[in-house]
Every structure is written in C-alpha cells, then in structure tokens.
Image 1 (tube, rainbow, N blue to C red):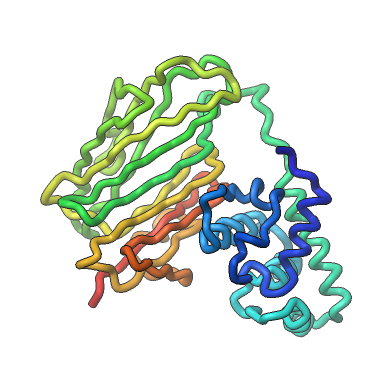
Image 2: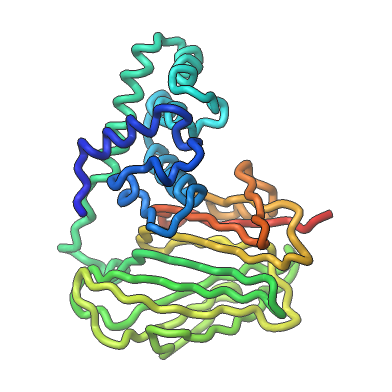
Length: 319
C-alpha cells in the first residue's frame, strides 16, 4: 500500500483531537496510513500501537526546530508537561510557553505535522552506489529475552532485505557488557534455530562476538529472508541487567520483549532510547519507566532506530 500524503496529514490532524496519543483504545483510532508508517500490525493492542506511534513521532521530530517540535509533541499528547484532555487546552499551554497567540501556535502545529509527513514519505536511499556495508539491511528485528529459565536466553529473529543482487552471506555480531564494572566479559552459547548456516565465528575483542552466516540461496535486490538464533548465557555466569541494541546498519524496526522470573521481578524497569556510547554503563534509571504486566513481561518497540545509538531496556533488582 502506498501512503498518500493527504491521507497521512488528515490522520495526524484527527489524532491531535481529544487526548491525542493518550486516547484510550487508540488501536481503534489510528488510520491505515499511520499504521503503515509506524509499523503497526493487526495483532498489536492499544499499548503497542501507542508505543510505536509515539516512538516514531519522537524519532521523526528530533531534528525539528524546538518550537516546531513542541508544536508537534504537545498537540499529539506526547509532551510530558502538556497532558491535558482537550487539544484546545494543549494549544493554550503551548501558546503561553512560546509567548505567542493560539493562532500562531496552530500554524506551527500544521507546519510540524507537514514535516512529519515529509519524513514519513522521504524516498528510500539510492542503492546505485552500494558499499559492502550496504549490501543488505534489517527490515525487522524481534528479540525475546527470557529470564525465567535456568540461565538467561534470547531468541533473536531478523528479517533482512538485500540492497543489491547476489547477497549470500551476512555478518551478525553481539557485544556483551561485563556483569560487574570491574569484571571480565563472559561467554555466549549461540545456536542457529532456522534460516542460516553458521560458517564462521570470531571474537575480535573480549566483549564482541562476530558470526558469519550463510543464506540458503542468494538474494537479489529487494528480496527478504528471515532467520533466527538462540543466544544463551552459560549456566553459572551472571548477566548484567540490560539488553540494548546498537544498530550497525539500517534497521526499519526493532521490538524487544523481556520475560522476567515472576518469583524475582525487578524493582524498576526503564526504556533506553537514542543512547550514546557509555550512556548505559552506570545503570542510572531513564525517565521512561516501564510496567511489568501481570504475566511478568514487558514489550517495547522502536521504529526506525538510528545507527550508532542504543535502544532497549534496563532494570534494577527489587530492594
């Protein structure tokens, strides 16, 4: 489905009314254009839709001038200081903050929404001059971290897209932090579940593991392929309370689910987004805390994670 800029703009305007992204049952109020842009699927419930939509808007508006960015976040109910029930109330709050009239603020809102449309519909980068690192990219990365078993284990499923013809091998890497600040990095057990053959592996540094994976057949430009790996921490080896994805190449979407041991739930869990190097080293809680659901799980999504930035969750034990 191709997204019409007019339809996307109208859906954004409609979403601004009422409580914006905070609207209860938002999964029933998001139109097809926004669903496609934000990577919403049919099985997503209201909170998943809210998370994906909010993440996409926050990421897309990051480079906007501050007055335009706030004129997007506040009307959509994403500004933490403007959680008012009605759009008019959020407009009035923004007018006071910017020392402008409501009419000016509404013009800025329109300009900001138009910028969101432009970001959503920008053409994909050309693959006419493809470098080795651009032979393929990740369409979807879905990780399930299980902490309720004998040892931490993570199922990682990736759907990759060839950006040129003849892609038959890909490299997969993982970097593991030390369990303690003064400890040495541990080991990993990696098992292929389906979709690829492990044909080589190395450890370029004490923390980094690099795997060479062969596809069952060469991919031509635009073709996709899914594979899955199971990554386990060896028994008896502790794991740092963090799972953060640092994209090394373009990734269209990243989803992480963590299943905690219900007899040992964490005291706090927080969302990590747009982290820079070293930002996650000291395990200081981030502002966006997460609630573990009744079956001991959390579920977070990150549309369009940026290369070189960190996305995921961290947690702290119950005191």
